[in-house]
Length: 119
Image (tube, rainbow, N blue to C red; front, side, top):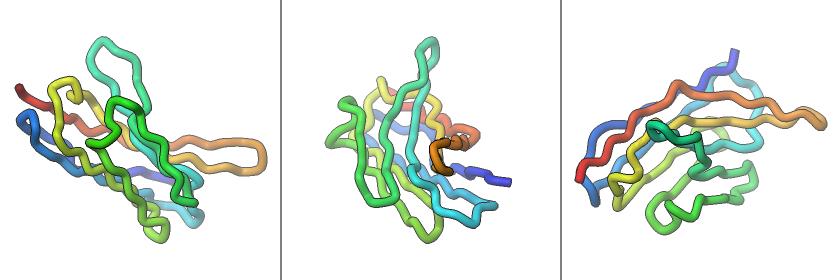
């Protein structure tokens, strides 16, 4: 059974930093893509960043230059370094992993990490 185990959320002041981690367990295959989504109260879930197994990344405009994603393919682990955090970054951040089997994509989700940025 695939599980995504997250860590690293918390409370930080504006301008501060946090690092999120997400490790996929119970897998014997590599995920094609891993990334982070976030959902703030009253808002829809939105993509923050995704990294593909070949290293290509796709960042949302609102985090470019502030957030950095990295990945350890051998460990099926992804990290999100968040710098210069803003109050608008307050949200639940969820790890997502995607695996492609033929023409089908399978999604896996972590439990979510609360990130709160105070002004």
